[in-house]
Amino acid sequence: TELAPGKPVTLKWANGKGQVFALTFAVDDKYMFTVRQTVSNAGPAPIALRPYALVSRAGVGTEPDTWTNHIGPIGVFDKGATYDITFDNLKGKEPGFFARLWGSSSKPGANMFDATGGWLGFGDKYFLAAVIPDRGAPVRSGFRAANGDAYQGDFTLAPRVVAPGKALVSTAKFFAGAKETNTLDRYEDRLGIANFGKAIDWGWFEVVEKPIFKYLDWLFRNIGNFGVAIILLTVTIRTLIFPIAQRQFASMAAMKAIQPKMKALQEKYKDDKARQQQEVMALYKAEKVNPLAGCLPTLLQIPIMYSLYKVLLLTIEMRHKPFVGWIQDLSAPDPAHILNLFGLLPYTVPGFLAIGVVPVLLGVSMYFQFKLNPAPMDEAQKQVFAIMPWMLMFVMAPFAVGLQIYWITSNLWTIAQQRLLYAKHPALKEPTPKAVVKT
Image (cartoon, rainbow, N blue to C red; front, side):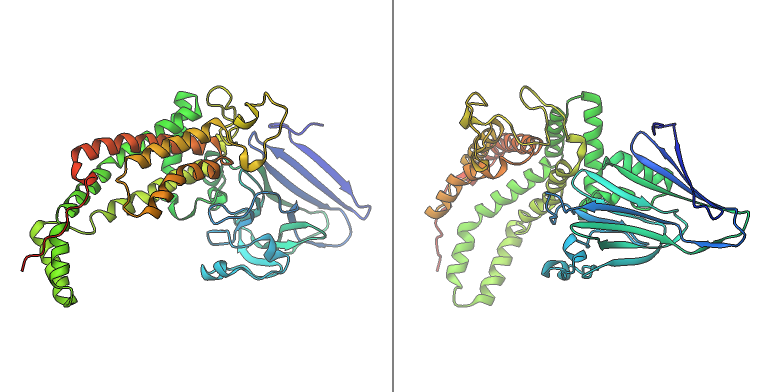
């Protein structure tokens, strides 16, 4: 018998003592299983049972658990999603320094919780295996290390008594599928699975990341090419924050214009810091310059650009999506390595030298972006800025091509934006005039 959507399968076993155990499995097209456990008691006496379910994992996998994306045990126990518990904790290790600093709730050894409903399981970057009790059922659930290199998440319901001639039916769900944002959100809404969408570790900026993903998904469904959707998403976001960049350049220009006056005041009152501060603030007021105006636009852009990066880092929707030519998986590194002539030479390029065409384009775009900035006066800084684009080329080469396409697009936008704004504020590229101290 084949288990398939719309074709449930039932397994039965009689223990020879009057009880018949039955498991009925049903599955949908996104790998959400509904499991109905039935115990019929035809024996002469009542029996006590505790409905139970578990999900296990062999090994920790190859993907690291990082601050940007939790890999490992994850669950919801009356509160929000728990990202604190690690495989090391289950093996008896204390939470690390930073985990304790951020208020980790995990402890060494088994981590068990009393809750109502919820869910628990193991997740990696793109997939999740989780067991889900009835949402109204009081459960004892949690994680523990099993034998060898295995780990287990399980839940147990309160004991129930089945009288002779009666049957107990308990229904739970089991998910073993991809962490597709729309799929998880749909299960959360339709099945009432609390915080199931948080199986994706969105982090602090979920309120920004979710709309960005929804827009990216809409672009892909209407265009049909995920790489083009990434480019259009990047252009859209950079267009929306362009007014912020304009204000930042205007503020920088105003600050540079008053630099000679400010340095003169600093020199004049160098022995009286209190008076110096008063005079500088008076200068800001007289010239209608806000010294923080140049910083605030940058601070506003940080969560937006980080959220865009996080969306491309986490979403499985980019996996196995082609772009152009040789790029057939935007979630993988560029496979066309230059040092073996794009596969023509029978030579496996070492990992740190596996540079493809896309990382080179990233390095070139960043080089020209840096060239547009005013040259730093310090020689050490000049050397750092000269080397940085090519260092980042090597650093980014192992990352997903989709992330690199986003970065290249953003660099090209920045180049055009800087040319426009430097043309509008040419004084920003000129050396700062020397201060003239008036006595």
